[in-house]
Length: 111
Length: 122
Image 1 (spheres, rainbow over the protein chains, first blue to last red):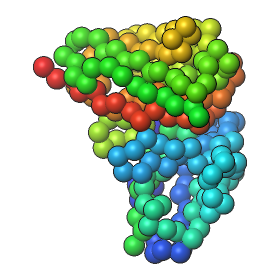
Image 2 (cartoon, each protein chain N blue to C red; image 1 turned 90 degrees about the vertical axis):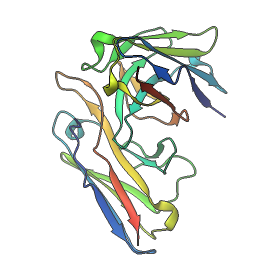
Image 3 (cartoon, each protein chain N blue to C red; image 1 turned 30 degrees about the vertical axis):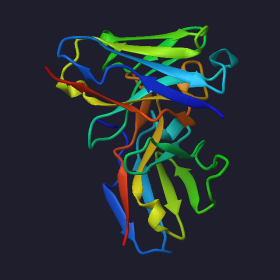
């Protein structure tokens, strides 16, 4: 089971904004960088955000990331139908069961 | 352009060993980065499996460690996964990925393969 908790789903109308939270602890989010991934139906995940708030080349600035304490947030503005996907947060967990961990995943629905 | 491609049997019998290979093109494994395996059971979330570097140093998911073996073949620019004593719970889409990292830690996954579905069934 994942140690990072995300809401199962969020939804909004086209053009609106959604935020997705990712909650963890001091052994993971609290002391390590967070990354975010978009997984369109039937495809592999794609890196959206790395090192908390950096976007890889080609990722529009409609996608943004932030971190505070043991939580992180992904924001999507100007929502488009093509944004309908599953979104996962990820980071390293430096506890006794060390390893890379992912969030539970959030389904974004464009109404 | 960096590309990763998984290959291996799509069906494995219970108690047998699952074997997959990830071929990397457009980038030499010897140039750096870490190389990872990640899986996703049908309809479920992502689970990191293991990391390996160009020298063959590995870091395994503690929950799978006793059944795992990951290796790298720099001459073929590929890396491989072996998971023994599989059960239905190991049925998943298996992805290989590239990650920047340090000291055995994968920071994030910037390139992914398309994934391959492995079903464990008799």
